[in-house]
Image (cartoon, rainbow, N blue to C red):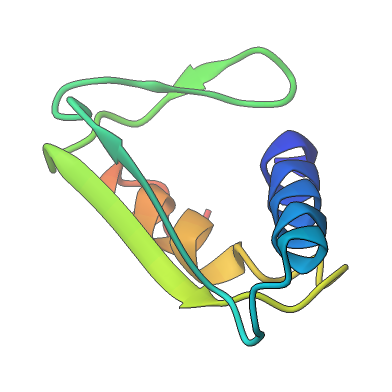
Length: 84
């Protein structure tokens, strides 16, 4: 999801301007997921989430497009899409 990555980069830039010391850590999550389906990029709905909450965290690295991959892997696994 490029918008979420872009938001992380903007937050990182903002923290830099405030003088906050690196490294930065991030946390992201979805709640109220149980029973929900996922909309794919080609506008299909797939899966059915088995978990109420899906969360991820890590260390922020500016411009790292794979930064959120472990989180999206958790979302896919929670919604029965892992390995598809």
